[in-house]
Amino acid sequence: MGEFQIGWVWAAILLITVAATAGAAQSSSSSDHSLPSLPQPLAGAHGAETEDLDHLSPQDSAKRNALIQPGLKYLEQGDNEAAFESFRSVLTAYPDDFSVLRFTAAAAMAAGQNEQALVLFHRALAQNPHNPWTMRNAVIILEARLNRWADFDRDVAALRSAKRNGMDRGLDGSTGFVIDEFYAGGEKIQGTLYPLQAGRFHTLYRFLMPPGRPLMLPDQSSATAAAAARCTDPDFQPHFDAESGDVDQAEFAKAHPDKAAKGDRSYMLDAYSSPCTQGLVAFYPDGEPTYEKARADVIRALTGPVRH
Image (cartoon, rainbow, N blue to C red; front, side, top):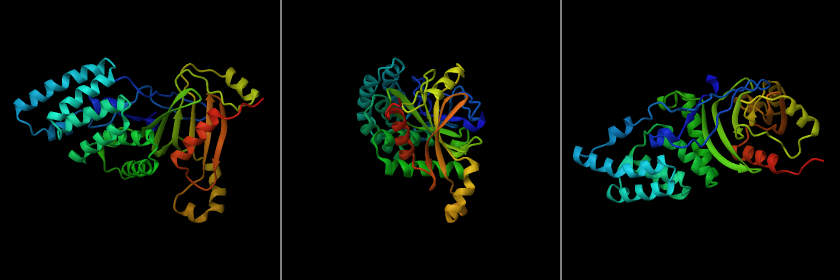
C-alpha cells in the first residue's frame, strides 16, 4: 500500500472539505499494483505556512477572515463560481494577502477559470516560494489543462527531483501525485505521477478510470473482453500504467548502452481492464516517454477504431 500513497491537492489548498476530484484504486492481482482507499493530504498543509505569513494586526486579520467566510460556504455548497466571485471581491482589499490569493486561486481552479487560477497561484507562490507542494501540484494540473507541456515537464521534473533528494518534508507522506485530469472515450481519466516509480513493475504514470466502470478498449479482442468479464472484483479500478518491467532492460542496455549506464530504462503502456487481464497498448523502446506522449496513447487506446 505504502508504495502507492497519493498526495491530495484540494483539502490541502482550501483547508476545507471539497468534492473529491480523484478516485483511488485498489489492488490488482495481475500487476501487484495498489492504491490507498483514500488519498492523504500532504504533510504540513494545514495552515502553518499561512500563519507564518500573516502580518496583519489582530483586528485586520479578523476582518479579513470574516470576509473570506462567504466564499468558503459557497465552496462547501459546491457553488464554485459564486465562491470565485466572492473571493475576488476580498482580493481587491487584500491584493497581496497569501491566504486570499490561495483561496481565490483554488476557487478559480474549481470553477474552471484555468488561466486566472494559474496567475493567482503564481502570485501566491511569489508571496511564499517555500510553500509545500500543494500549490505547486495545482500549478502542474493547470498546466496540463492548458496544454502548456513545456512548463508542465519542467515542473514535473522539479517535483521528481525534490522527491528523490528527500529534502522537502512536505513530500514525505506521499509517493504518488495527481497531476492531470482529462476526458477520453466519454470517461474522466485521472493522471498520477509516481516520482520514485512504484511497485514491482516500476510504475511512473498511472491513468485511472472511474471506479466501477469497465475498461473496454475499442480494439480489444472478444476473447480478452470475455476473460475480463469472468474476472470481477467490485473494488478494482481499471487503469493504464506507464511502467518499466525489469525483463525488458537487458535488450534496452544492448540497444542503448549509454542511456542504460545513466539509469534510463525502456517503458511500456499496459492496460489493466480487470484484476486478471493485462494488455500492451504501447512500447517505448528508446527510453522514458513524456507524460504527454503516454497520455496521447491512452486517449488513442480509448477512442481508436473498434475491432470486429
